[in-house]
Every structure is written in structure tokens, then in C-alpha cells.
Amino acid sequence: MTNAEILKRVDHTLLKADATKADILKICNEALENNTASICINPGYIEYAVSVLGDKIPVCTVIGFPLGAMTTESKVFEARDAISKGAKEVDMVINISKAKDGDFEYIEDEIRQIKAAVGDNVLKVIIETCLLTDDEKISLCKAVTNAGADYIKTSTGFSTGGATFHDVELFAKYTEGKCKIKAAGGIRTREDMEKFISLGADRLGTSSAIKILNREKAENNY
Image 1 (tube, one colour):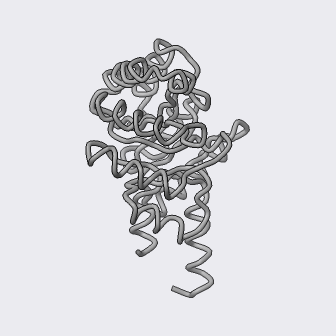
Image 2 (image 1 turned 90 degrees about the horizontal axis):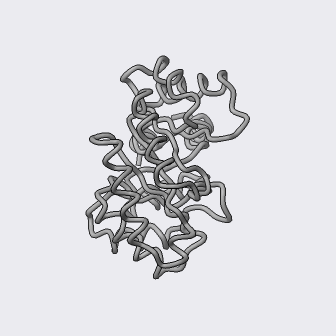
């Protein structure tokens, strides 16, 4: 794959707690220069990022992040607020405790309410695979697709592990093409990016893709 083919699938991400306005401007400019799928940032900088990017690159933000332990009502409010400020994509974290309790009906209902809040904008559902069994992941594939979300996403990048090839393969099998797949967390090589895409990931959440691919381009003089 070419760099451009990979980067058009990348949500160029900066979710650090100490990210500054200058940091946000930097990733906006990098996204514009490299034509990424979006930038993914914390909600506090949505309006600023939109003022920089206009309609050239979508702004993605996170809600219920990173633990997912907030109430459904608070997540719905966050989602509506994010859209009102110009976000075009929302990555939500499920209530992981409810998954461990086997209450997938709760999770499906929560996703459905948040999807209603974002409307025609993109909703990606983070299930935090590193904390789940395969049976729980399979049940969540069903909940995510039943609720009408646009994507199922592996990880926040803030827990005990990130995306794995196994999980993307499992998603591809059990979502049955009813939603798209985002791999995120710990993606640090071109080989990883290409492999995740080949297994069915339509998006990659990473802070390092541009740096990796541009460094490789410079080293190989192409």
C-alpha cells in the first residue's frame, strides 16, 4: 500500500491530558498536509480544531473516555455537545462493567441512544478488547451492530493493551459487514497498519502513523 492509501484511513490522534493549543494546531496541520481520515482529540479543543480545519478534515472526539463508566445520560449530553461544536465523528466507550456483568442489553440501549444523539454523523464504539473474553467481544459485536453504530473499535489506548490482529479478525467475522472496524492502540509500524487493513480494519487510530511513514519515506528517498 502507498503512504496515501494508509493515511486516508488514519484518525490522527492526540488524546494526552497535557495537550496544548499549539499541539492541536500541529496535528491539524499534519492532517491537512497528509490528508488523514480525521483528527481525534479531546472535546475541549473541538471548536478550535474546526476553526483551523474547516470542512477539509473531519474532527473526531471521544466521549465517556477513557473508562466508559459514566451514566448513559452524561454520554448522550457529551455526544450532543460535541456535535453542536462541530465534531463530525464521535468515539464512545461502552460501560465495560456492564459487559463483565453480561448486561449487553444495557450496552445496546446506550449505543442506540448515543447514535440518535449524533444522527447522521459517525459513531464509533470502543469496547476495550484487552479487558474482555472472546465470548464477551462476540456479544458486543452483536450489540454494536444491532444498535446501528457505524464502527466497532478495539481500544482506547489507555488500558492494559491495544489492538490485536486476532480481535480485528474476530470483529470481521461477527459483525458480518454490518458495521466498519477501527483498530486503535499500539499501532507503531507500517507492517502493523497494512496487516490491520488487510484483516478488515477501515480505520486506524494512531498518533504515530504520519511520523512513521514520513520517516520511512525520507530514509528510502521516495
